[in-house]
Image: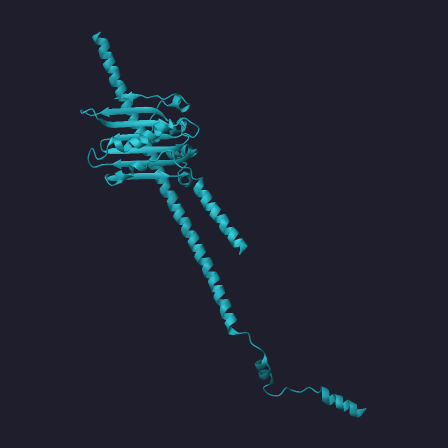
Length: 112
Length: 192
């Protein structure tokens, strides 16, 4: 019985691993190829770049649209002013010719 | 891959659809393009419906004239202006505006006002004409030919007389065009 106990005690006794055991185990663990990590980093950078460039392009497009709209509002005001001026001119000329006709008619009546 | 093609087709359809959506103007003013080289000052305005709606956003509601302009734009499809100022007389001829006059006549627009002035030689020196399309599509055209200035204004869309009157602040006169707006026959007022 004592022999068995001694045998078990010896077998289950705490022992320190031999020196360099942890390094040897880690050395045998297969590593992921470094190429994969590089590819993922590049993909992330590319995605970030696409988002940044798209956002900048969208903002630029909006700015161009805004400028064009402001320009269009100026053109519209110019167009309406010109329309107004030309209608004014037509009215003046029609009124002037009507006045001339009236004077001529009055003169004819006076002569009669 | 299939989704990509479908998305492409949808975008293409939307773009071409938008292009087709733009109505063709009833009046072709391209006959005036050749005057651009002769004129000392050229003002060309081409505003389609999209640009008109974009421009409206920048009109100031507090400004009475701009607010009136906003009301006028509501039913307009496009605004075209060709304005040429020349350094000397006779740098353009009446033949240059003849294609446009022919077009408005062919379209059956009502000439609501006409004013002509002839020179000593009997040739037309100045001409002002205002045409109104009294049909459902609407439209207003002004041809103003002076010795050193030529202007053609074409407003595509329903032009309401009431709204035009509101533009008085911009200098619009009180033209008696009420009757013509409701489809009266051509009023050729040949003034000389």
